[in-house]
Image 1 (cartoon, rainbow, N blue to C red):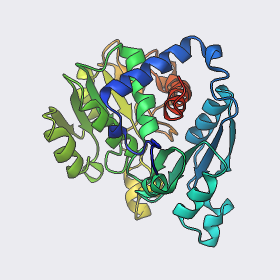
Image 2: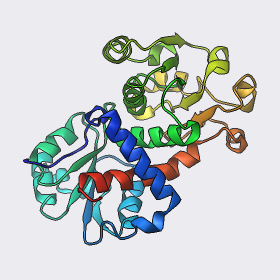
Image 3: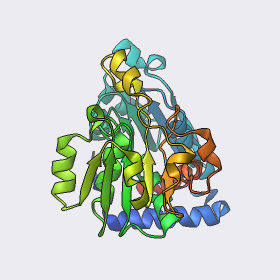
Image 4: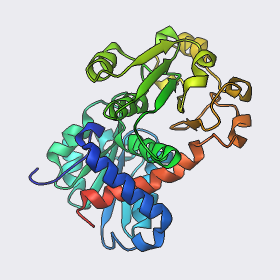
Length: 307
């Protein structure tokens, strides 16, 4: 559709635009009341064809915090998709009722199709194992808040690097900043896909190491990004059960870590971070949840053209 800007992939945003969004997000953290009426009279539709707690509620919270309204559904079975309606038709319809749409879908590429048929901006709230740009913006706001910069950081990713869409998106985003080093920690079966290594890391000349041992690389990390091994992305239960407890972060594993390490996790966690780590001042994952609301507020305003 003409002149409607959507966000499907994090790389559609320039580093300058990311810096601007992080700046607005930081200003909202300092003074949320100043933004309480920015979206008065605007409606966000949340189209969630796949279950979600955090992402859906943080979008709703973001729009309500801006003074807007929210409508939508939280699973495909409660929409006309259950009757066989296409994504294109659903979005054409819903864009008649709303000013902006946040959409999650199990099929990769579905939000892109939606954006092509929508009269209003569409935000990809996760499509299959593919992309999750607003989680990446959340991660970036958290990193900036914790470290004060994006340059010269060693970022470790641990757990499911094969199916983790949040991992793929954040690696893509961080690969644009000077001095980034990437450390990949996973079992062999869940290694980062070779296309991500080739298209993102090698293409941008980003130094990276791959290992199966978290302890061996812990001392060099500025950021540790933990992920859960996702049952829903596995083809068989045996593989899932064998690998699900491969990497559990405990206080003992943090012994050699930097004093100012920041531990991130896109959540939900199952058991890959021991609750004993929650008390560690380096644990930033619940702060990360809060920042998700603020960065989504910034993004909604940007896509609606609100200063």
